[in-house]
Length: 151
Length: 151
DNA sequence: TAAACGTAGTTGACACTTCACCAAAATTGC
DNA sequence: GCAATTTTGGTGAAGTGTCAACTACGTTTA
Image 1 (tube, helix red, strand yellow):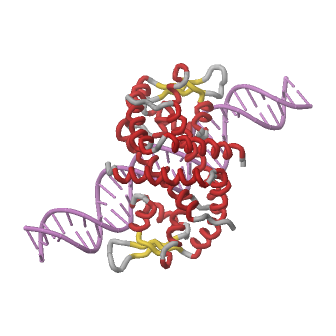
Image 2 (spheres, rainbow over the protein chains, first blue to last red):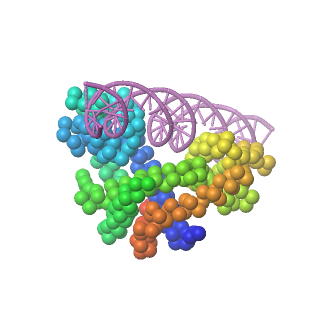
Image 3 (cartoon, protein in one colour):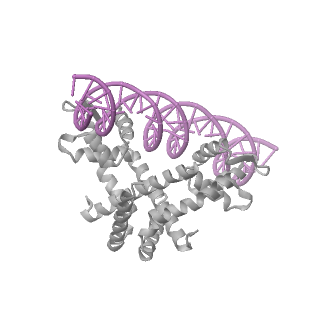
C-alpha cells in the first residue's frame, strides 16, 4: 500500500491542527464576546443576506450544508433564545420559515466586526496574498472533487 | 473598521468549507469502515507510537491538544468498548495510564490503511507538491502565532 | 509538620450533532 | 382520482465536547 511520505504526513497533520486550533479559538472568542456560537453566527449571517431576513428551513440547510435534523434542533434552540422565530408557510403546508428577530439582528451586528477582526488578527494577517490565492484555489478544487464523488 | 475584501472573503469561506466538508467526509468514512470515530483513531494512533502502548492521561492529552476532561470522558467510553484499558499509576497516586488492548490494536491496524487511502483520494491526489508545501508553511506559521498569543 | 498551593483526573450539567425513524403534505404516474 | 413516491420537517436516543466544581494526591513553604 501507498503510505504517506514524511512531507505529506507533516503537511496533513499541520493542516488538521490548524483547523482544530483556529476553529476552536475563533468560536471561543465569538462565544465570549457575543454569546453566539459559530453555528448561531452562520445562521444569522445567512438570514441577514436574504430579503426580509426570512428563509425556508430547506434553503438555509442547503446554504449552510447542514442536515435538516441539525437545522431543526438548532433553530429550536435559537428560537428559545429569541434570536429567530419560526413561521408556518402558507403555500406549502409542510414547510416553514426561519425569520431573524430584532434581537437577532442586534446580536449579529454586534458580533460581526469583532469576528472579522479576529479572523484578521489570527489568520489573514499572517498569510501573504499569494499564499491566500493558493489556499483558495486548493480549497475550491478539493471541495469540487468532493462534490463530484457523490459516494 | 477594516472589512474583508472580496478575495479575502472568498478565500476564508472556501477554506472553512474545505475543512468542514473534508473532515466530515473522512470521519464518516472512518466510522463506516471501522466503527472508529476520528477521535478514537487519534487516540489509538498515539498509543501505538508509544512503548507498550501505554501512556499517562496527561501526556496523551498534551499530544492530542485535548482538555483533560475530554480525555477522561472519551477514554471512559473507549474503555467501555474494549479498545483501551485504564490502569492506576504506582509512582503517582493521582495519575493513571491509558493502555491499548489487543482489540484496540486490531481496530487501528484495520482502519489505518483505509484512512490513509481516503486522505490520498480525497485530498493529497488533488494538490501539487508545491501547493502542499505552501499549506504546511502557512499552517505551521499560523499555529505558531496562535501559540504566542496566550490570550 | 501543618497549611497553602498546585497537579491529575473525575463528575455532572448542558449544548451540540448524528442517526434512525416518523408524519404530513405535495407530486407523479397510471 | 388515487396509490406510490418524494419532499419537508420533527423527534428521541446516543455519542461527543466544554465548563465549572470537586476529590485526591503531591509539593512547597513558613
